[in-house]
Image 1 (cartoon, one colour):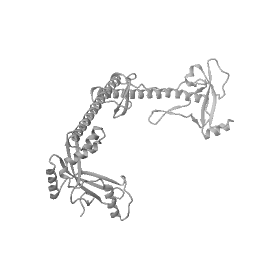
Image 2 (cartoon, rainbow, N blue to C red; image 1 turned 90 degrees about the vertical axis):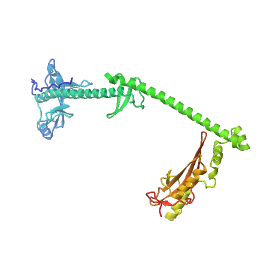
Image 3 (cartoon, rainbow, N blue to C red; image 1 turned 45 degrees about the horizontal axis):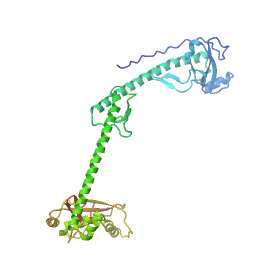
Length: 392
């Protein structure tokens, strides 16, 4: 049920007080308070003409009867002031606004005027706070409805998760929503929103357990694969290795890289007549840049260039014949043509160069062997244009 705003009528309160600016003897049941207001330039002139001090800020004492004490505010130090600041006024749309300033007069106000202004301030203050309370309640209702909707959606969808930083606790959790990160608290929330932290914690713990089990399985698979690879390499050394390799294998001093190199030599013996590819792209690019720019460079760092490598998307008839010949030579291996493109980052005007190679891979047990060979007639790579085509 939506709250209904009740209009607050503002009626001027009757003031029966003497109109003199100086207070008389304190009457029984009254209270002497301080009234603070400001004078404009015209008011300051009027103050001087009346024998006053002409200050912009004026402080006078006023006696307020006991039945008008609602027009008085008392601070923590026991100082009583007439309710003139902040002052409340109606704007052009008849909305009550709060102005944190003392009233300004163009003349010396009488005590009657100050009390009437304090009474009007008191009435408008009630309307101002009533409207703010209503607006605050409406925002709270809208926020409660939004939180309830988000909570119901979260509880109904098992795939949703709370934020892991900070992680959910039995009391609170945070959800990422279109309205930003919302906190749900088991103590302060009501309705379905109160059940969100408990469910978020349950899902969080289930995810942690599942991740722990997944990592344990992956670790076990990695250990099993490592053992299978080592068993395959050990069996190969015992069957094809040299006496020196067998002795070092028994002493657990034979590097796996040496075993894989020897296994690759045997697996790709039919391709031994082809030159092996060496990773000399930096040096090749340095020579290319020197020839293109006409100046010497002492060295090339990894920040100076970038390499793009990808399988060849189209081949010539000669390259196709070579590829078929290599595949026939090693039928148990997979052979593909591979293109590397070297791009000089420091000067976009330097054309890229390319290197065509043949990549052969074979699997012996759990061990994957790989060799890369330079394709004949493509050792000296030709520069490519910006669209990747070879230049003439």
